[in-house]
Image 1: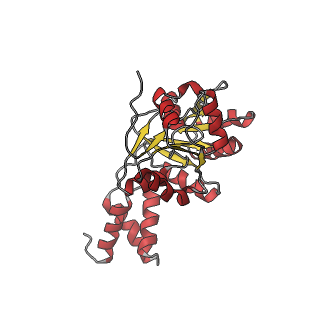
Image 2: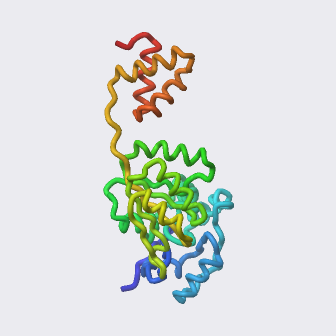
Image 3: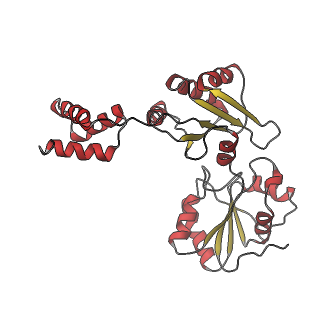
Length: 287
């Protein structure tokens, strides 16, 4: 059956294979072949994809990456506005998921123009589904920060995160990251998913302590997704305990903001409710 392609101008966000080239859908193939313009994260990489599927683009491929996405957003809006079928792809997976694309989509949508998708491969969902961990509720963290302080803030937030946590990591930093996490949460289960859909696909499962030790013993290469078990939900904290902690902090000279931040971090409670409680305390309205 021949794919019925969209009429009128629109932006199509098209998912491409994360490894196995056979994962490109028939609908995606039709869109790549019929688009008025295809924006690619790396045109050299995308030409390989086109060649493997014997696709001849109607016009030359254009580069749209993290360094020029903001500048090209208006150009994409103008193309869609004048009726062109614009296709956006990244090197692998779904554009906008830790890849360029989110700014362009936002600009086209804000202009009141049509945005749609040909969904397909994404390392995030693929890794989650093979991890063996809970999939009903999860949070995507993208790539962790490079600085130690940034990672420490992420780990602190994860102490109270009950959902499964998914993030990307480079092979060069994987051992360090897992060692840091093992010190924080040694008994939490983790799955390190490597080279998904490719020849050397591998999934390492176990506790953080076990997997960190395994990774430290050998070289790990390729594209990596880490799926981490969530923690136990934070227990409810009595308001009197929070009031005492806030009062002690403010009596010691802390600003209201610093007192709230300290209590939120120490007890794992919601910021908004803690801030409101601090305001009541300061106003003398707490009972």
